[in-house]
Amino acid sequence: MSDSKVLLTPGPLTTSTQVKQSMMSDMGTRDQEYYDLAQETRMMLLRLAQADERDYTAVLIPGSGTYGVESVLCSVVKENEKVLILSNGAYGERMGQICQKAQIPYELVRCSMIHQLDVKAVEEQIAREDITHVAYIHSETTAGVLNDITGLQEVIHRYHKISIVDAMSSFGAVEMSMDELQVDYLIASSNKCLHGVPGLAFVIAKRSHLDQCANVAHSLSLDLHAQYRFMEDNLGAFRFTSPTHVLRALHRAMEEMIAMGGVSARHQRYVKLQRQFREAMVKQGFQTLVPAQDQGVVITTFLYPQGFDFAHFYEYFKSNGFLLYRGKLSDYDAFRIGNIGAIEDKDVDRFIALLQAYYKKENGK
Ligand SMILES: *Cc1c(COP(=O)(O)O)cnc(C)c1O
Image (tube, rainbow, N blue to C red; front, side, top):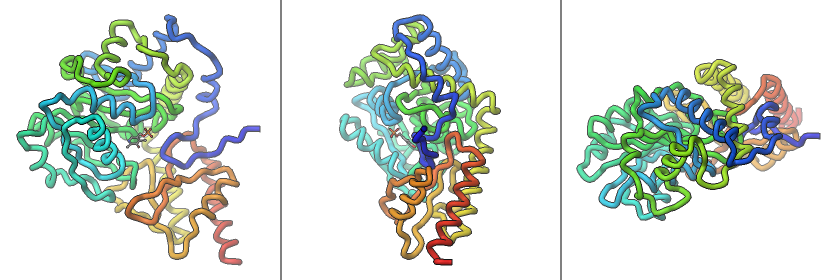
């Protein structure tokens, strides 16, 4: 019997049966069939990003999403340049850690994690002479805030800076067009809103800038430019052993997504799931942390009610087949429910029934 659980987390997440089945084959990595799969996957990613192939390229980086972010920061900021990180959560902080470790010149502006970045308030920082790159998170998974990518890109362009956007938990969930937004580097991974399995990050990169970044990285495996050139020159081949099963799963997951109506259909599905979870929780007395106007569509943060025993609550759901998200927020007693992944209506119904039963029992009714 399968011991799979329904994952109510921000990734990895529940995958469909077809995605799981797509991994039941072994592939060689130095074989035309695999190169073709990689090339097609890169093209599908560009199409989802609404990125013109002449201006943009999709570079695949093995590893979790952080490897993708690290690969960009290490590969495109030169010694005499400086990246401004606009942070409103743990993933912005992580960008700072990456820069610190790799000795990449950076400055980090720390903003509230429960609100969108205030575009007006950060403009002065973006405008600074010494800043060449601006990095931020589109969907900050920490509290669940969705930042205003259009507004931020506008200001970044006004001052002619290079943009680096972590779109890990928005790519596939929020309609966006690289051709319009003109993001220079957009990073996401296979195991978030595309519903693949963990193990592969990717970067949608503007060729005109990446072409100027040869030999910038002080890393071999995370050198984005080297990976890009190798994939381009060898028609989809990776430099080193790549996660073949993960790539198959990502390709399958995107086919499934497109057949189900693409990004806009997925967005609507998430909105619906999130509302169902939120309404059921609010009914039991939970409060959400993020104001409605700042709230994204992939994850919701709930504050602990008075006397709440999260460990007990967590184990109850786990023993009934659901994994809640355990990750703590630094400033709040709160937990999160993710609504991405192949969550079916029957799963939602069962979650709501379990939640009601939990509180009946708790109250000794
Ligand atoms: C998931 C996520 C990442 C990457 O985290 P990994 O654990 O390395 O996959 C980065 N940024 C955001 C906003 C995320 O949601």
